[in-house]
Length: 205
Image (spheres, one colour):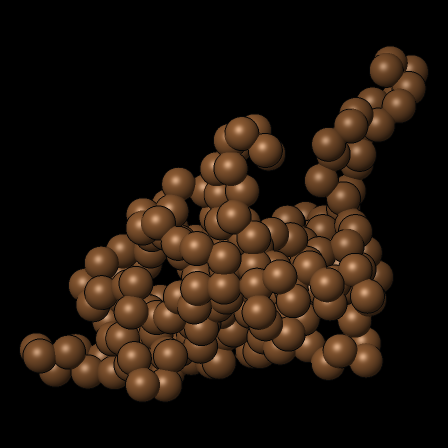
């Protein structure tokens, strides 16, 4: 499965040939350097390790600097492995946005925006006690009953309650590539993808 590491730039919209306005996301995809080639004989599986976004050597460990020096490149901030890569690559090869074509479909994975500690109304879509009517005073957004009384005398695991929301690994599948801007390493993908602007994403096809 071929892919690249990228950075989410932001959202915009473009018009298609029929004049329809299409929301889309702009991603800076690559260029990525092959920093390690996994083989079945040595590692037990075949994969390519790609590195993206240069990192200051001052902020890198000596082990990391030595690892990336084998590929003839500087230390990278983001490293991801891709199995079953479509084309054969060697250590130190540079893979850019040209691996994608306009019109094909890709999967994009990223970390969703963290929203902190949230209640059940925002986190799970609860309607509030009594749908927030009939004199509930100050309990409009309360979760309500969470368990029975004498039996089982506990709250079941998995009960939807308040807690930390967001910050999860999310993959959105089958997004169409609208444009490939090779000279600027940009991908324009239809729809929205997880994560905030300037966050790292993984694009697979």
